[in-house]
Image (cartoon, rainbow, N blue to C red; front, side):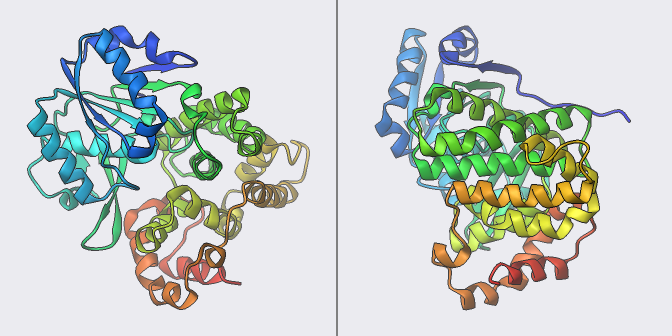
Length: 383
């Protein structure tokens, strides 16, 4: 069956990738709108970027008001700042939040409707160029046509998509060395979830399968290493590659039940996206593993917890156990340990299940799931 593979226009990867990208940056425009966060600014990484822009005689405005996972209010503030600055292209520097934000901001400088109008629709305008420079290894936003923005009026995370794949992706693992343990765990588990869901999605194809298995293999081996020692350069390099691979996967074969159920928890209880994925992944995948036994067995082999000659059902169990071991190594909390009140959680389970189904992600799962199935999984998180 024929398929299309969508990638960023240009990809620069490896140590000093930013320097390699200078000719391309010089061709994008005369003034860059840098979207980042205050933490990234304090690390000095913004200075490293602006030094390159100064060398290229490219002006810039720094918008570092992304104070967490992006909301519609942050996006509107960015749109206002972009229009007032006279910039003609954007650069996202940071974790998934600045990268998602720059894509949304530049799209909304062109679009006329409220941002909530585009939830479930496709953003297909002619937008200014976007450069994505991740400083964490996980979200894969540098490779995707997606951006996730919280609708503050309706308490939902909107999954926006369309012509949002960055024109340029600059992936330098050295930029991730400053990521603290908690961010390393959250983003690493996010990338792991991307790869696993892409491989078991009904939209998987021959090339995303290759990237997904590679990413799972790298993350299983190197995420615990980077979590223990953030200065391990080899681990950081392997995770940066894996995050990009997993981003390519979800851009082309999408996510499934875990992401669908994770977004409502993030929106209502303000749990970081990667952590909410990790809180859910074992329970969600245990519930649907019978719908793709051989594929989950393949993932067990990629993790190194099973062999090709093993019985597929035995390998599936090993995979689920391996997922739990990875979460344990990264000290992923339960909902209760995170501080979420059980009564508050149960009060919104019906809304979360409906929001998850409305996102469309659970429908990509190889086992058919209903709203009632999602309610059952949500309740089971407290057993």
